[in-house]
Amino acid sequence: MAPKTNGIGVQVEDTRICVVMVGLPARGKSYIAQKAQRYLKWLSIPAATFNVGSYRRNDSPHPSADFFDTNNAEGERKRRAAAEAAVYDLLKWFKNGGVVGILDATNSTKERRKWVLDWLTREGIEVIFVESRCDDEELIMANIRDVKTSSPDYKGQDPEKAAQDFRDRIRNYEKVYKSINADGDEDDLTYLKIMNVGKQVIINRIRDYLQSRIVYYLMNLHIRPRSVWLSRHGESMLNLDGRIGGDAGLSYRGEEYARKLPELVLESVGSDRPLTVWTSTLKRTILTARHLPQHYNQLQWKALDELDAGVCDGMTYQEISDMYPEDFQARDEDKYNYRYRGGESYRDVVIRLEPIIMELERSEDILIISHQAVIRCIYAYFMQKTQEESPWVPVPLHTLMKLTPRAYGTEVQTYKANIKAVSTWRGKGSTAKHEDPLPEGGV
Ligand code: ATP
Ligand code: F6P
Image 1 (cartoon, protein in one colour):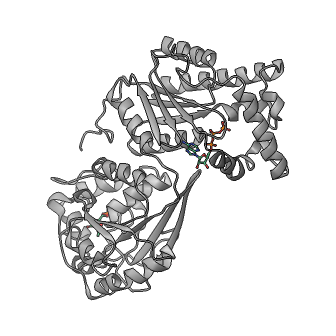
Image 2 (image 1 turned 90 degrees about the vertical axis):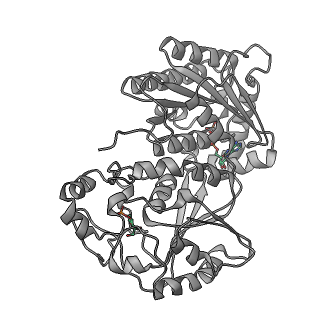
Image 3 (image 1 turned 90 degrees about the horizontal axis):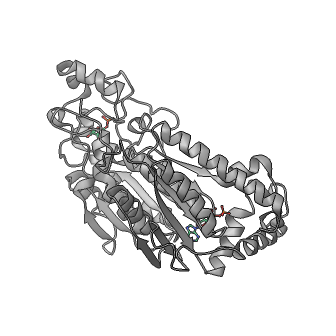
């Protein structure tokens, strides 16, 4: 069995980093925290977010704006208690093997930052502050309207009144808010400042590799509306025989899918807006993309090639089970970590897909035409699937999937081409060549 490594080749045993969010309300702090957590967990780096607002809600579920006025002694006491409870739990989590903890709160004064920094440093934890600044009034109003009025803080309240109260809450924060190092006396801090969703960034005293990966990822985030489309190649000649891997051309039905794909894409995109198409370097994905409109840019990525089955490449599952019964069973027991002899595991595929995810975060509309295992790994990133689940996700042939990132999650739509194809999905313990029908809940 291959040794386990996490996705970005970091020795995480001795590393413990706390990402401390900073910024006024409705600046996307929770959004950034959730994305960072999802990215790190996908790379097998234990990560968790501690949202101080949730701790505060235990005691003060529906506070009005004056609760956040620093002259309100009761409010101050409760807010401090909530922050302490969150840091306690964060420290407990680090003791149980946590690697990157995220403290999601406003931490908007120098005093609060010093308090957090001193406490965490005493416990041997590296601290990196991530501040989101935004002076785009329209965006802030949209954030309030889209996310804040539906917060549990305003449950059952009129959205107009909730929005007004939230604006008043921001005013109270503004009275004491100090951007990191605004006075020039926080220069020793490790921090990333993101202005207006990445239009400008300031990076200060980033210390190690894992910190720099987190910073690089966060610098690439944008919130312009966009979707990512995923499709497997059309049915291949090897799919027909139930053989894995290889570099075969398309079957007659696979070719039919390639011809239908432009129509399916147009129906899903809903307009003539151009897409960028990424394929693998294998024939079956390139052939599947070849009838797409000429004005779509096409790019081939080696990183999108199918999971390498090593010595089993070109075999059927039945042949693998006959020739390598122990391997076949080991794969079923831990499919994510099982590495084919001379080939790859799902974990290996995730590692090589990291640059794809980074590029996807920077990009707008992209259509990816790839393979079963690779699409499972990309799907797992967007849908937060666990390592136990992701290698078993059904991804049928001749189906286009549209993923649209939203504030807290990803929306999925599927478009079936209605062109028959074999099923390449295999259930645990089975060697089925074409297991049909697909299980319920397939994407
Ligand atoms: P609070 O302090 O009330 O918890 P918050 O700063 O955590 O607020 P979020 O709840 O994360 O704010 O706001 C989510 C909204 O912020 C989403 O609609 C998202 O599109 C938007 N957003 C994401 N990143 C940014 C950014 N860098 N600047 C401004 N808005 C952003
Ligand atoms: O059968 C099609 C295929 O893309 C193979 O080339 C690949 O080995 C396999 O799917 C990956 O699926 P699983 O990990 O379930 O065996």
